[in-house]
Image (cartoon, rainbow, N blue to C red; front, side, top):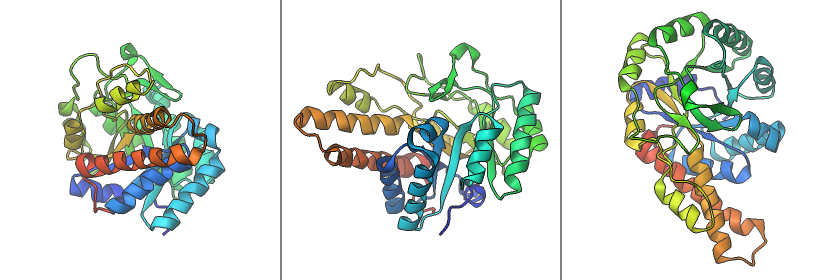
Length: 309
């Protein structure tokens, strides 16, 4: 099976009232852990690459690793660009084998965001590639994305309708209270489900995306710190809220920070217990297993997409 787009994947998710996990990848072990989990769960899968990941691992290495994952598993897998911030990076990924790209014009004024997104949509659709865009601004930090809480802006439902109609975009990332990175909430976490419901009603059948949806499990924060880390306590998005969002038109949920925590905790633990070791395979193998366990948990208990491939 070749790489697929998310079009049919999202249609099934919307009708089945579940979400597909979009997991950020940076190297071979992360890809293997995610894909092994998806294979065991028989779950649809989006592997997404940020601009930072492309710079770190190189475009060609990541695409070939993902192609190997498709050949190894036979699963429907989407290769997606996460947070492309201009036309050129989207074009490079479209021309370079990605089946889905995100153009993030949320930093621009509404009219400029529409113009940029429409340009990417026109180029992508001519080549059979789907496009995600973003309207509203999420707080937090992830790779090149850095928005302060003061500058965060929730998505306006009426603007969302106009944006989708004028751009022809295939899915839309909205801001309803999630946040990039590990340091999300100072008080009690809250997602604006009334806003989400209104957007879903105004855009029936249209796939909504949530970014910044890692839950930051406290056991990983505590364990990472136990083994020499310095991760401050952080309140993530409760998984019950994410599960609810998946029943309300959210078809794609992005997960990155939880994978980083799981992997880093495993490596720190290994080196505390085996300080003399210097074989990368010895500490990366359990780290890969930690990624797999985290992804399986998300697929079974949060996204509700196990068995839906």
